[in-house]
Amino acid sequence: MTDKNLLIMDHPLIQHKLSILRDVNTGTKEFKELVDEIATLIAYEATRDLPLAETKVQTPIEVATTKVLAGKKLAVVPILRAGLGMVSGMLNLIPAAKIGHIGLYRDPKTLEPVEYYCKLPSDIEERQIFVVDPMLATGGSASAAIGFIKKHGGKSIKLMCILAAENGIERIQQDHPDVQIYCAAVDERLNDHGYICPGLGDAGDRLFGTL
Ligand code: PRP
Ligand code: URA
Image (tube, rainbow, N blue to C red; front, side, top):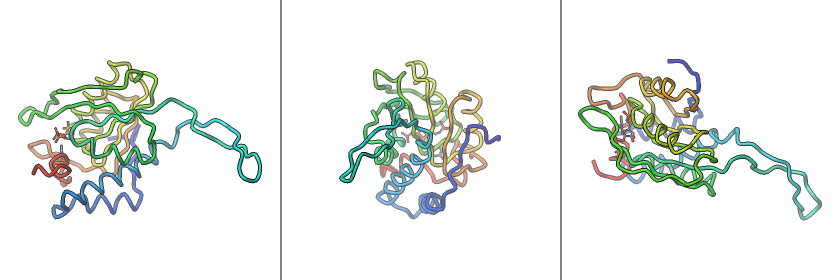
C-alpha cells in the first residue's frame, strides 16, 4: 500500500474516539455521537484546501481586509446506510453543502455492491464532492459510488471514511487515482465475510441499532 492520495488522521482526539467506537460495549447512542464527532474532525482536514478570496468587512472599529470561501459549491454524498451517520458531522462545518444519496449494499455472498438508490444535486458537476462512508473494506461500495458520481458528471471528489482496510484503499487508488482518501485508521486484513479486522463490526447495524 502506498500513501499516494491517502491521509490518515492521526490526531489524538480522533484516535481516542475511534478506540471507543471499536469497543463492542459501546452502545448505539454513543456510537452515533462518536461517528458524528469524528466526521467533523475529518471534515476539518478534508476542507483544508478549499480556495479563499479576499473581501472587505466593516468591523465595529474599521474596515478589515479578510478572506471568505470562494471556490466551488460543496456536496456531501453519504453511501447508505452507514454513510448517513457522517452527514451531520460534516454539516457542522459546511452547513450550506447540498446532500446527495447513493444507496448500496454489499451482497453478503459475493461482497459485490448492489445499487438501490441514487439522487444527486442537479449541478453535481460544479461541486466539490465529499463521499462519506465510515467503512472502506473491499472498496467495492465506495468505488461503485464514485463511479456513479462520475457518470453523473462529478469531477472533484474526496472520500472520507473512518476505518479502512488496505484492500479498500488499494482498490480506490487503482479505480479512482484522482480521489483523495481521508480516514482515521487502516487495519490490515478482512475476514472471510469481508469484515475489517479488528475493525469495529457492522457500522450500519451499530449506528441504527439493527444488530
Ligand atoms: C458497509 C459500509 C460500506 C460497505 C463497505 O455497508 O457502510 O458501505 O459495507 O464494504 P466494501 O468496502 O467491501 O464495499 P453495508 O453493505 O453493510 O450496508 P449498510 O450501510 O446498509 O449496513
Ligand atoms: N462493512 C462494515 O460495516 N464493517 C466492516 O467491517 C466491513 C464492511
